[in-house]
Image 1 (cartoon, one colour):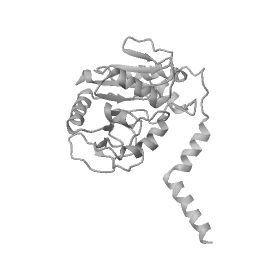
Image 2 (cartoon, rainbow, N blue to C red):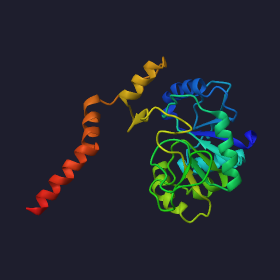
Image 3 (cartoon, helix red, strand yellow):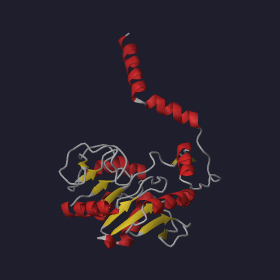
Image 4 (cartoon, rainbow, N blue to C red):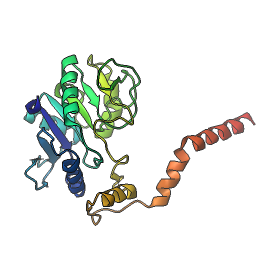
Length: 256
């Protein structure tokens, strides 16, 4: 099973400053990772013997690049990771291997290993997984996930971005017969620091603080860092109590 499952980290040269913290934390919290690691870029490489660099030389876009890698590797299944999400706790390799074996046995197409949203259907299994209904939003979330390679390949459309995959690809996935499963928030199999490291081209200050606590150096010279207050205010506005108050006020204005 190990030789048929590969980890793919689709990236690009402009995100190469995220590679060092990503791999430092991956090797710290997943020291017994049994799967080949493939970092996908255009020209730049990460110099570590544990990492297989795939340099495409020509950027044809997210979907086309990923299809090319899947075709070249010819693996049965994939663990998909993103380079700006940083591990914060130990990965239970035996549990993950058992889950992959179970997923292959039942013919699953996808298992979300981290992130949100929660699955919206129950599913009888020994791994604490739920099922994602066919028309659920973000059914193809590109958070950490296990994919059947054929399922992923069928959903890739040339010219689409990762954002397109999460939105439009999720809609296409409703036509596939294989089940899509997911862990629940609070019980991930791959546990990330809660926020992405980079948002709209800039480092998030919380991710930088996390890296400092972990003793991981981050090169901040290549991109800016978001200011704290705008992000904090945005989160406050989106918090459930504030959202409820704003909805109530809108209703009052309509009533008058």
